[in-house]
Image (cartoon, rainbow, N blue to C red; front, top):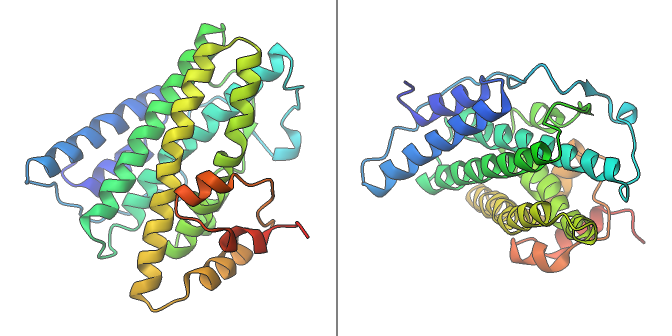
Length: 270
């Protein structure tokens, strides 16, 4: 049994099966939260997590250009979208535990670890909800090929906590705030109320994850006397050169602590 939070995080990262990974993630998150509530928090410790997390044999991971495109309005297209979102959520579980393990050596306040453990726990719940939706339709996670580039941002920012915070929660997860309302509408029109319910939970909780990124990014900038906006722009241009793309969900981004001057200057919009 892992004795430190960093060990727990590494154990999740080295578990391959999606259902097993997320069940373990939820158990470890509950143990950390209970220890904090009892006033006897587990030791954070230090760990050297793998550069890439363990993955199940399926789905086949393909270059983005090789992932089959399906019309979103069709039943097959909606199933493919559901599978793609499940893949994103499983990667997010690993991204948040990797945040804990890889940067455990940095002297953060305990709240840093509270936030990312909670985020990992919520992403685990999201993956499970989406797997349930897939299985209710006679499918399962792994039945379709998936995007191979999902972990690239983690590898590129493995040595830079500010870059990790900028690119993962503040760019990639913030993008989820932009696109999820459209997905909810699509599944609602199709009468897929179980998917709508799952996506509404995901949408509400992803705001927290973006907010954690903005909170700790600004914390580090303040500690190091850096201008947050300029630093964010420089890191995104370096590690995510494709930039951010409108339309933006400005209301939810603002709720998460991201003002427009963070992301609009990085867009292709005039």
